[in-house]
Amino acid sequence: MENLDQLREELLASVTAADSLDALDAIRVSALGRKGRVTEMMKGLGGLDPEQRREAGQALNAVKTAVADAIDARHGGLADAALDAELAADRIDITLPARPESEGRLHPISQTFDEIIAIFGEMGFSVAEGPDIEDDFHNFTALNIPPEHPARQMHDTFYLPEKPDGERLVLRTHTSPVQIRTMQNNPPPLRIIAPGRTYRCDSDMTHTPMFHQVEGLIVDETTHMGHLKGCLIEFCRAYFEIDDVPVRFRPSYFPFTEPSAEVDIGCSRKGGELKIGAGDDWLEILGCGMVHPKVLAACGVDPDKYQGFAFGMGIERIAMLKYGIPDLRTFFDADMRWLRHYGFVPLEVPTLLRGLTP
Image (cartoon, rainbow, N blue to C red; front, side, top):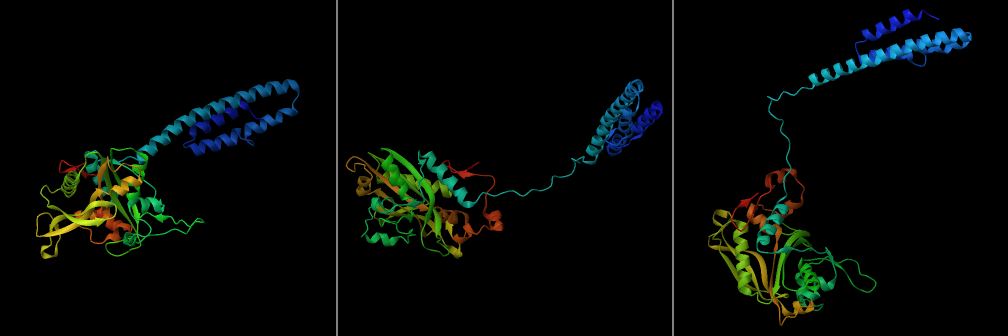
């Protein structure tokens, strides 16, 4: 057995001299590890007679305890010093300007959705939704477009594979099926808008195979064409933020409304630049009309008691007009440069009060 007093003093001195956590851990291993000096001496106790083993064991345990306590105390001091050094090295100079961070942008389609919902929401409309894949009844027949009706040729429809019973589902060509489902499942009075995706086989600067529409519907006992005109005039003026934008209604034809009309807004094209507002030209933006009695009857609504109006518009189209976007296809290119230019932050929407409100 080594001189235990000398061993303890030597080990305690080395613990005190340790200047880092790594150095302290090396001392711990060399003294108390599996092959450490104190551990090896403990293993040698078996060769002593019982009386010597008891005395030597007590002395070794005292050395082991003293060294372990010294290591724990030193570890706390070194850990605090290491943390202080790390904090000093990571100190932030708050006098420096903040590093610029890239900001996301709200897509013009999302912005326009929010604008439309905000404006019609102030008029008392609620939002209704429906499936993108529709059956023939909801997409055509209930809208007064029977199988032999030539108006079916107005839609370049995506048909899904034929089912065993001969039925073919379609990707909805408009959001009008949402109106049908709403009338089937809810009694009048009704006041909804139906924004969502629609699909048609077409692609050029002003058409894409998938695009967005919003349609509106009111059904009650007293609504008439005057209410339709007032509602859409207020919408046009709120959305384009022009109090005196001219609005006109031209007779038109849709199989699901009677009478039907196209809505134009005034504009000017002087110098090749389109400007919404007073001018000597007109621009068509949406279609509308009084709900056809056959459509009401197909949905289980009594056309002798109830009447209403409906309208629909392309969201991309009115976004292009308001924000000066020349090509519809760029909405879907996922070009970050385009989004940084045409995107929105923070979110602001126009209201009937004629102004952008965050």
